[in-house]
Image (cartoon, rainbow, N blue to C red; front, side, top):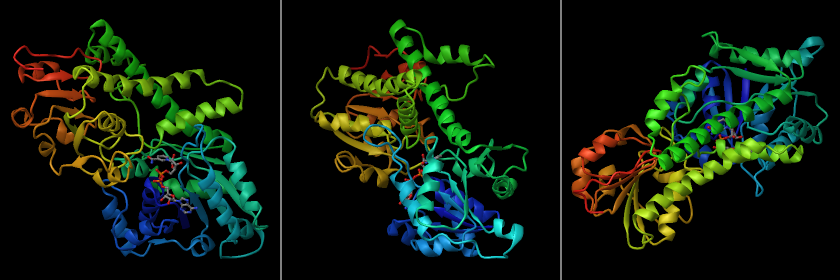
Length: 457
Ligand SMILES: NC(=O)c1ccc[n+]([C@@H]2O[C@H](COP(=O)([O-])OP(=O)(O)OC[C@H]3O[C@@H](n4cnc5c(N)ncnc54)[C@H](O)[C@@H]3O)[C@@H](O)[C@H]2O)c1
């Protein structure tokens, strides 16, 4: 199939590359010329494990090309996937400006796909416009209307929400738990199902449904996952208040098969480019429908409070005096395996520290470049190439992302290089008993803080 991906971000670039890898001819279109120049030089503009190799292989085979030329990208496509961003607007609703701008471009360039004419063939030549971006219910209708303002050529609409996770995006896309396709035309559903067949050989299902339900599946899924995170964080707060240990509570609770272990880890709350904005967008949909999304409002509030509570632990430790403190930070990305720092807890925490007069030296295996672009934070911190180089003379170490390399560090080196052996662990990477033996002042989430007697606070 001839496919055009609109937007070469985390979703468009990964999914386009994977479609090329199964033999399709894929054009990746972006309005950002820097991204396209990079891709045409063979460099990926994002970090995603395994992506560089896959891009090279498919670009070399001539199945994967990159362009800013909208006309060229839209003209030849049989299927167009809209994968542009849908960030929150100023009141938290999904901002559809990028989706609708792409729809207008598409309408202006609309053609029937080249090929046979007459009878069924005519129908097969209609382009399928697929909204892959995460969008509120009803967006497909708006996209259809926007395209139709600029063309009288017939086309099909479809919704195909994406469930990949940054850091494991290729595997998630190649072996999805499920594929969801929303259509209002059976033949379009059949063509899209055929495109996904190579990815579901493991027997996982392709669910074809109506467009509104497909749009809703994505929000419902992300809202559920965000709810699990806020739930366990709320329980962690209660554990701290009452002297229980969240690790033990988790073990006891998650052994129940109805509950399970996944997505029930206490920490700094959810971040990234999806959960925060998707929960807010659900709340926004509720407001528009005059149905208050009471539960999801609470999920959002708990998430905000979680970061603030962790910051307050740091403030309390230093008795409110952060000015002049040297703080080391391990991990900037919102989770391991990605360079994405959008809504990352580390960014909120570092901003607070900087505003309070502390200096921050941070290390992340891949997210320095993306962090540098965050005004007011990325341009005010120092970056260390090595995790231990953040520590010299530091008054505290804050662990913000659970990258594997932070899980089993050399505590002797940490203690020697820091001015004070104080760790704030936002990911509960270390055992309480071990930190006691290692003589650290240790603050974590949902567990009692420890202050070994031999350590000067
Ligand atoms: N990032 C994820 O893990 C993830 C997972 C599932 C779903 N989603 C959803 O997918 C969508 C895209 O997310 P992302 O993280 O890939 O976004 P992104 O910000 O990384 O990429 C979006 C890209 O679209 C480009 N763009 C904007 N307008 C354009 C236009 N008119 N024509 C061509 N290109 C245009 C931008 O330049 C940018 O490169 C969002 O709705 C998001 O919620 C994201």
